[in-house]
Image 1 (cartoon, rainbow, N blue to C red):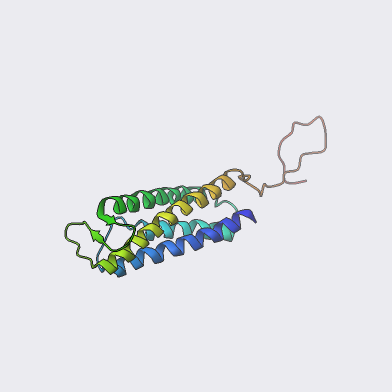
Image 2: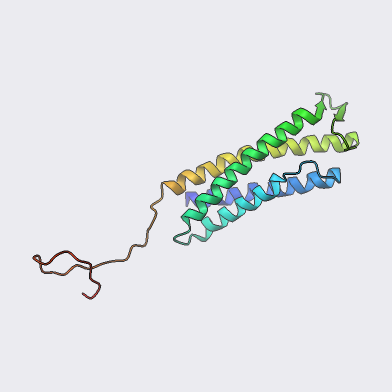
Length: 168
């Protein structure tokens, strides 16, 4: 139950991440970052959460791999968008001046304010992705690996060696 709740929250964060990345492209009408971590990170989070919600046995290794990749994408989102805000934007607290320092990209001040807000949202979503996927990773690691073991019956004679037999 706990994992399914985390998986549902992960899907919500992933959809917000994908939407914010697409909105960032729509606002600038250009590629702001060439990594697009909001898109592929969101896709990885949705894939991991879908496997958790389907709850099929034997998929824990895939869940672990996708969750680790989702944590990595959250770290990349946090790093890249923090770097973008730090390097490219000069934002004052009054929002009167918003200059975009990027060679080759010309953005009007209103779009720049929207882009600063979207980058701040991507930083927050990256932090949420790291926290949620870390919780999913911990809950997956604490879960028993194989819950459906085949039942073997032993022969009833106490002097015979304990060999597995499915005939009795």
